[in-house]
Image (cartoon, rainbow, N blue to C red):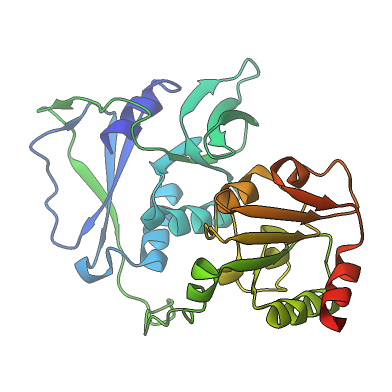
Length: 297
């Protein structure tokens, strides 16, 4: 919270602090950051971590404020509420902000890390449209507390709503990745094999050769294989004796997940595919045709 106040001060002379608290919260604080006003919303304590309730609380705060920029912590507990509030109020939304600056045209320049935090992307948010930014922890120093802080102006009490989404049970995915993590041979399919029929051919070849089937992110995003089969920075890391890449271009995020493979074989018709830079052996041929040959032999 205190970092958000510091960030807000960089782009605005008037800062309102929004507090979402338990239902029995007092209307005064012994100390608070130096802000112009404090708005509060009470929600039941047993719903403090409920995404739908938090989203309604944020929406209530926005309805009582003319703020052009709203800052929230960049955490999983706030992500869903931020997205819901941004859609409800037709706001620009940026996550993991590490820098805020007023643009020459009166808009907002926001920086956020991308590509595994290797570079910073600068985004321009237009003037005249409310914006909501999720601020990455540690990007600003915490604001100091003062004793003569304004009273909390409670604007709403959020009660449980029977229409909200209610958590009933957590059902975890089937643990089918152990064979992939420990497999001595991995056959991985990529965008070059973009149909279910072609992937089934590689899957059949994998079973015949005693290999585990894996995928790059595009195949998972298309719904052709489950997330538990994804290799890469946002998926699994594998260290097989042999890694065969069928139709995989070799994006840095994917290479990060299979870099420990003892032998890498790349099969791709694109001679300039980055995967060949990480491969010990390569073939510039149709990956599906190679899979058919393996199935027949």
